Image 1: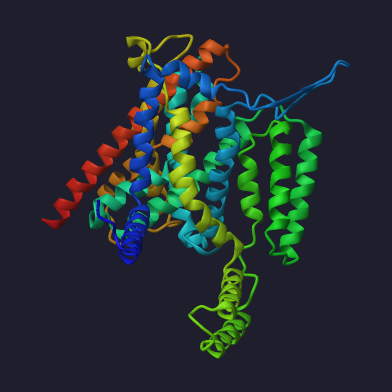
Image 2 (image 1 turned 90 degrees about the vertical axis):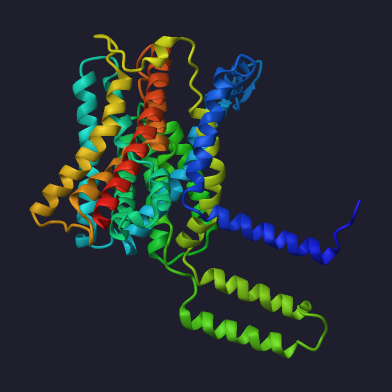
Length: 464
């Protein structure tokens, strides 16, 4: 057995690390990973050898139960299971990252000015209203009517991933348009969850949480940029939201808006300190192999100053994105996309009944047709009224094709599905949610294929 020399191992480790980072930076890789996790979840939920273990694991209690002979029975957190831990705690990080992205776009990105923001915001609004309308037209007056929020969301990871695979077939202006639209759509979906899919509100706890949020806001305005003063209130707000009846993930969005974007250290301070430490590094260069103890201290100080020269919001977004895309989102998919299909009736998710309506029909056509029609129609109205401008180099055909990718609901749609129909009997709730998930997967796949085909077709016609 040959032994690789030490320098060769280091070389191969560097090559592997570079390859891993290059692969993780590809916009489409997170979408591929999510689809893989969906397949895994479906297998786990339906294979006879794993389905009972799969559901039992998700239903495992994670609450701490303290009781004594005097009748004290304290459960904390209440009703916490593995599935709720994923949806109510891990997904807080996802929503926190989404909140940071929305804030960045509003402050200095594609939503930072009225002119930039109007078209994608109006298009996002149309892309939410039309699917909801289609769903209500199908399910109004039935037990499934409360699921109207399910087809209103767009999954930005999948949409941007598919556009990156299609390359220069999509004009850059339309890529920016769909990205900004998806971010505005995320904000809309967050508001839908906050206002329509929460529980019974405990007013006292809500007031306490609002007071803490106000205090954090004042700290931000006072120029406080140390992370500890934002992390501790974020944990407190999560607990208060969880027990107040507001969906706990909303605490992530609220705290994201409080995180300061301005850097702790100014440009002049950064230049002054880094120049000073670089001079010290040169001064100590003859004291041994680089870096020696004094030089390591200088490098650590440079690293500290460099971190402080980047706003906390940007640092957190950059640090959390890999964890969200490659850990939290896949775990969410495995926990929530596992739909058990015990009979052929579940495969016929278009089935309609006067009592239950048709969750599958409403979601499928809401995403596949409602999204592109709503986005295109709202964009047409905005441009005709001159409150928005057509993206440079784009045609109406290509805008409609890109709008079809907005029908990829996946993550947020599944999330809303897990919150829907809670007012019904447990067995009906489970049935409707399972049918909803099947419809989301089918519609998202169909929207991705349709959008890709239309973009390819229309780009070839433009070349001719």
